[in-house]
Image (cartoon, rainbow, N blue to C red; front, top):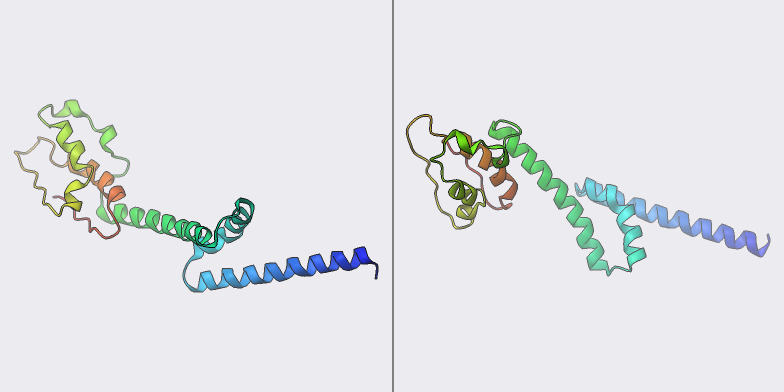
Length: 156
């Protein structure tokens, strides 16, 4: 066997060993229920090598991929379970429908500061003044902005 052939065989063997090791890592991630991290592993590892990322930064990016997907799934599930009308947001709200609604107050509610401060919000008024459309639109904003530890309660 020539030196070139031997070097090529060694490189191929090393690449296969690396692939096998990556497969073991991917299998471990899947066993832990980190399927999105497992799917992103190869790309993130290539990026980490190219950018010379520290191991803890690589791990942080891998976990961030998983957390992002889980958060998206949580928001989708929350919106589905909330029975809110789809596609309605504060940006599409017709403020001329009820000019007495204080737009700044509703937009402030949409920031969810009351959730972080453990405060209660009560919307009251006669029928037909916009109590339902305002919270259903701001609920979409709340569900996206809510922290993982905060619980979202529906406003009725």
